Length: 409
Image (cartoon, rainbow, N blue to C red; front, side, top):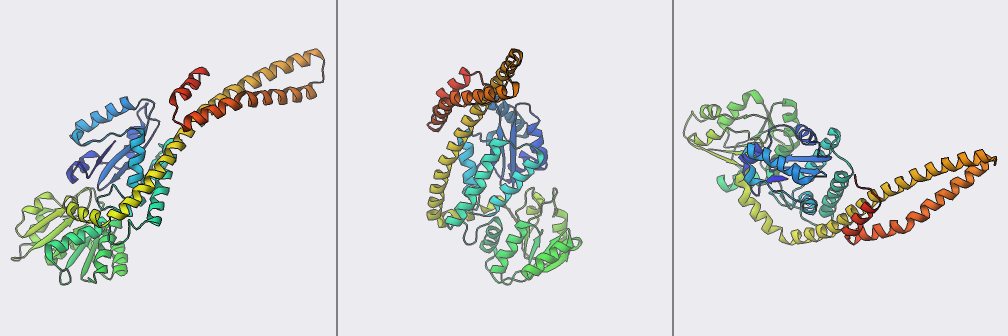
């Protein structure tokens, strides 16, 4: 189940889930029908991957939650194969607003680790996410999809240039010192711009970023003063509340007739929406990056085709792995059942032999070896047949084997 920038704006994505990802994982996993889940939450998406014996019922419950949040009309639901294909595209950068960006792969890794720590990942999602991460790495090593300026941060700078023209003579304030803020700073530094002020709630982190990029770290408490002198403010914090309020901006703009561009690339948003009503202020957010995104896709068309070929190849491989896993799970049950029978019958035979006066130790080994060989030989042909059926997607035969040996859960 997913909601992304393709169907939703920044407000809708904010509404999809307000809390942290660990809480979302635990909430979904608390449903008795959910055996595994991984939640992904970034500035452009909220996605949930679920393993369940009754997917339809779980989806109905999640859709009820979506209706309550007012985002029902924006939700997409994918079945097993579409979910796999989507995650491979996502890890490869093809589902990002800025196609080819590297950040999404790191985010998937981090969010997968959070889900593992939450105890909501099992064999199925473990296989899926590990493969998706491998595919994301392969795509970036074998194609140029991520080469050049390709991130939300660089897109924000490009958007600023379209609004303000050249930024060489502009005074720029970056709020935040996380990954997104660093990407903004790098994009500015690549253009030779050094009139950059960096504010962060933790001053030491602002200083570290300023040293790397050649900017000037400023105290977070002095934010209003630096908004007062800035031509451009790009805000990219991870704060759960607004860091720039209308009152703060009105005070900053009270000195005279001037223009100020504020670009908010945070989610949840850093800037109070009513700031756009302040005279002289232009407020833009992630939704305004769509035009830059479309141009980026046009520039990368050839690389996108190469990436899609890799994804198609890896998708088929992964489907086969899942089919074989299904067969292996079934065969594991079959062997366990046969082993139980073997042990039980061996114990029975030993009791009879012991009662008959034969040497128990020697007889035990003979009987044990004999019964082990019998089990292996009995199961050899069914094993080959079930694996062959799984590879050729013969679900009827696999299901028939499950029913035949009474192996359904």
